[in-house]
Length: 370
Image (tube, rainbow, N blue to C red; front, side, top):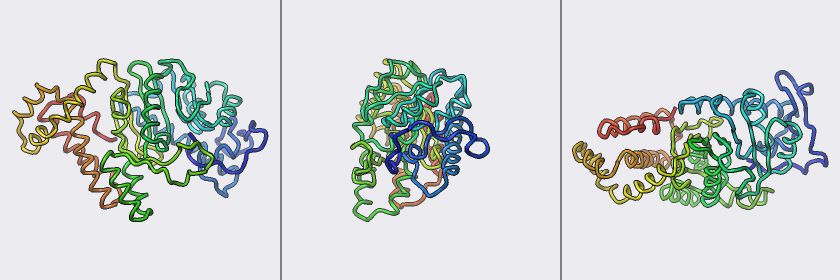
């Protein structure tokens, strides 16, 4: 689950790494060896001290972003008991979680055996395990009330995402949360600037059709990662569907992960909530045309009637996402850099209209990006 290809072959002894006394300033405790760090960051000509400092500072940044995102959804990291970092690598995030939140029970899982082995030796307070490229993991059902990840879905195709999201649902306790990051519109627009015309058209066609672009012919071919590890762009809203509606979106923070990836918080639905959401989604497809016309005409009485007939509180959320997606298509097609404030304004405008007409519970919370 590392982000970047490994550098040179590792030395025979993968233990050790630098300690706080060997690097400057605030770095404390054991830090992984450089070759492990360069599996999750681009290899560079910087000194070991600079590499270790960046490893720690970006880990702190990611934990700060997690706290901000959790706060935007109405909670704090201190309110969780057991946290799993899915795709933990050599501990860029989990080492900072262990340092800053000693009350958390922290676990990590990754496909990189060397990283897991190093964490087991050097961060014994956590529970670190190796996993295959596809689930299951060795953790028990309902082991965690929070699952986090940085840049894992960004490398998986649709089928792999479905299987891993089902595994995350299995691992989550009732009402548990998952925080995921994706390459969203901002990342896609950036890449559209540098690919050739035929590739651009293929990506745009895939985005328009499913809000999901998987690039199998990329720099990760032959990189040393597993065969399914490539590049993915997707709308954060697709995660709900790919989880078969087991996960309810709560908050999306655009460019909330290292200023580049979008971050989304989702809650595990109860079996009853999930079944109801699946039914509503089926009905929504049948009635979308009627609802769209009512939205466009501002026909409040017609909307009220549809709400009573179809329980439109969740259907309207679905339609809201589709309307915003069409607005985002304009940005992507024009290859214009995404302005977060513009998207927020558009979403808030549409949300306010739907909210006034339908008095939908939770629409504002689920649609606003912080």
